[in-house]
Length: 68
Image (cartoon, rainbow, N blue to C red; front, top):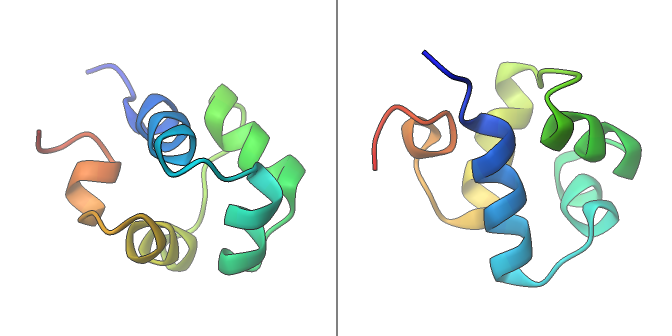
C-alpha cells in the first residue's frame, strides 16, 4: 500500500493556508521536520501524528490514509 500520509499532510496544510513552521510549532517540531514528513523522508512519532490530526481537525486514520 502506498504511503498517503505525506500527501494528506501537504494537502491539509495548504487547505488551511499555514506554513510548515506554523504547523510544526503547534506540534513541537521544526518546519524542516514537517517538510521531511511531506516529502516522505521522515515519519513522525505517534504523539506528533495525534497533534497534527488535532490541529487539522481530522482523525489519525484519515491523516494516515486509512480512511477517506
